[in-house]
Image (cartoon, rainbow, N blue to C red; front, side, top):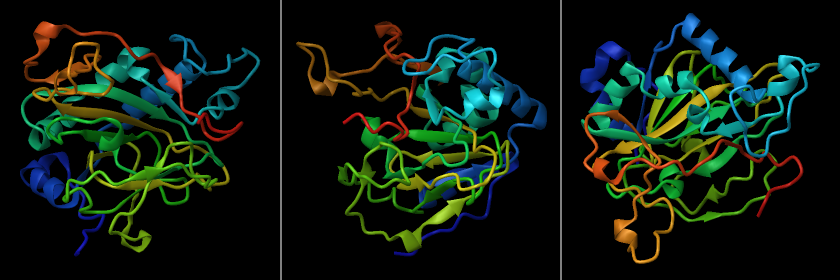
Length: 295
């Protein structure tokens, strides 16, 4: 199989080729979506979230006023659902440049169901090979992630690695528990027809966005930098036409009718709006192997 590379990058002005590259490689890069002022605001909001100023985070240790911002935020690897704590994070989920790209690769009607705020200070682990659609199943294979670099993401500080084209077979590969100290507690995918030598690093400048398919195999390695963070905001989206069977259905409902309704419409119309919107998930931290994994 001939695999793609991490280049060429796309800009907001090169959208006519965005869908083609996305279909071919499973990902595209949008350069310079957020300027320095926007990044400064998002980084300041990250501190407020980690300090608990915007609401409770399940599993988080309460911060002390005596602790510096650095001491507080480096305790975190990842916070799930920051958009439920912060209007800025919610607005970022609906950023017009991102939504424009999403409508090109998904369709005119798009909803979001998850956000994740990564901090990843030096020494923090990465994630083993995985496919997002293994965790968030859609009925039409429309799951798409946006990964917003809040710092420059480099090989040294633990940028994402991807297997270009690995989304095309449309296969969810098997997964297993692992004890690899390089990675957090998330299970790893295995038995796929690609080698680590096929992988390419996706280094991003702060403010750029990686858009990638839910079937694309990807991973990240630990932040091996001597100082600093690899902060990023990741959001997950799908077509609004698709049901979202993310949890077991209620009694009397078949799996084919299961539809998780804790969602945010970001583009177009929601054909299932008559079901209403529900509030199921609460902000929480992701285990990072310190103290073991909850199996």
